[in-house]
Image (cartoon, rainbow, N blue to C red):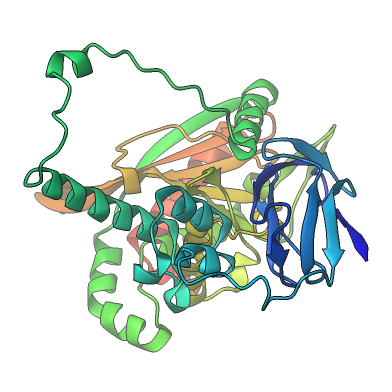
Length: 398
């Protein structure tokens, strides 16, 4: 029986998708629920499973082509062939047999590099292999190959002059995510009146707390106590005091949000993504750290869902992890403000008439001046500074 393989219903506000990669080719057997094709939207990669076991007979859309919901991707002859008759011979690469257990991004990298995933120790949750694991294995393989080439006879390399004179260019199409990010950033610049205010925060008190309770916290909650949980909790308390920072522009109206969905900017292999900590005011420090850790893992292996990235009333971005000292973050529409964290540096600070060395971070708050006045923005950032410099305020909510 022939079955039409159709594009599933796409998430709301997503009009089309791009065929990212086919995991089977015409004539190959596929099991029920095995991933058949990956579709890339402007936010996530959707894995389309096979509805039944059978033989893929026809592909209607090639990799790189655009599809819309309910388009026929190909034809499956259900029940044709059997797993036994289509059993892979012993020499079939292990990567092909284990591919369904890997994320789309990892599968592509494994296939391109020829790395055997069974030889890779996964660092993700429950030992799952993430992209960084494969990249490390590739680097190790290349290092070994270079070592072998120094001792084994080989064809002489081209003269250095030949290599040096090459002027290589490579044209690579933007991913849908990168194009969407570009569109949103331009939209933010064109529609919002963006200003940025700065301050600095002394993180000595938080650093002392982390040193004092780090081991006990990790032992009890099975997650490390980082700085981000303090910044999320401080942002929530400051948003409660200045609700206009948590609001958005809706036509000629201002829409105030009575909840606190905090976006955490995360760098992924496909580009910048902002997964959402929903109802962050109801999360414990441990819950915040665990969710951020989970989002980081999912971003690396390309398994973030559309729901993970939808919504948000305020965002936090940490350029400090890349060494940034100071920057002006750009708004994430339709949000009206974003907090930028930066690298922590040991700096001289005056305390009680004496110069002491303290861990200091510069903070930046970019905001939409259409609805947020400079006074509110400055006082909001000062409130975050006070909460972080005296963390007991977070417990007392003052």
